[in-house]
Length: 474
Image 1 (tube, rainbow, N blue to C red):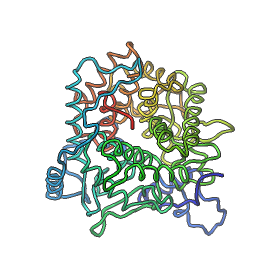
Image 2: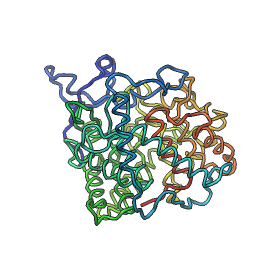
Image 3: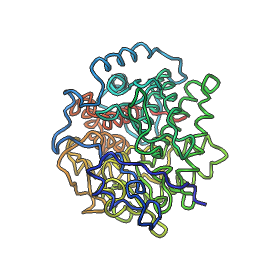
Image 4: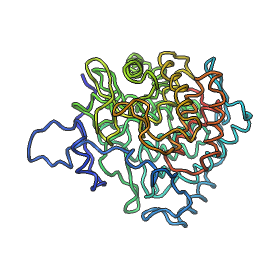
């Protein structure tokens, strides 16, 4: 039986884009009734529409004032003061830095000392807290993801994982509290995908359904918290992690084919779609370890991911290793979608979702020694080095489906695309050493400042924890 529920559909705030995008959004409620309201019965426009530079060819200006609807300077100062008061050292079983040994053959930067790498991680985490953590609304701590007082579950998952790795229990528990105030109206232990400050509180907006990526990170973060602080205190982290994991299986996995779907809203043809940026290979293996009643199911999910990655590698991306933003079931395989599925005309290309795959797909090899997806990752490490030449030569988008595989369709770089290539480079052996060194220098200040934007900064911090040798497994 397909483990999905009737689709819960979100409204749109991007009114000007609605008409243009709805025609290309595949799937949705299978209802031929002419009286059905289109805006209420079409898949949600995806998050990546809000990522990208303000003007092509230039990085976003991060020094100016934020736009209308954002916090006032007084509010920001108050939040910063609150964070400084609340973040006190907490006892953790694995306080940062906590160095681990990755799979034999993995490399780390050798142009900088271990202590210098650890210091960079700490500095970027402190900056990230100041720039993005907020408590406005009184429901706990959330992550400011754009120039309004809004957040999304993707951002929240990032934040909980970061707080756990950094041993920041105060912020972690406050973020957990916020999560419990914003459950999905489909999966009871999943997170509603977006909230905005309104009427003195943070309210779910644009539908109360979930996005799979945020839920995967939240479940994983709770396992990290279980290891860090135990589960016998005020929060039983392990029990809460299992609740989220079980809802992921029940509402975000199509158990006909064991693919991760885009969210708990996905039914019908949408259940036969998957998003490679959700291929969090290390997370899935951790779930299989802890959720012993469902180990076989999680292994099935992992195997479907591996099948999709390797089929794309042998049927289109053999020279690049690139993955697309979205894939769809075709026969017994998974292939890039054609045209617009949820977000843009580049849903079948290496765009603002897939830019994370060089990091996510590497983790099962780095930490667990799995070699089933090593070949496409190693191909990407050699290909991008030759293609880009330098870190800022990495373009913010490459064709996978809609043009010659590996050709860029923009002429600018972005941190969200550059940073994940550093994790990928760790798989490249000695031939990738100088490339990895240059990527570390680039993303820690050589080419990108301390504050770029929510998306890039969150991804960079995860990458820095990994590349510095601090990404341990629960």
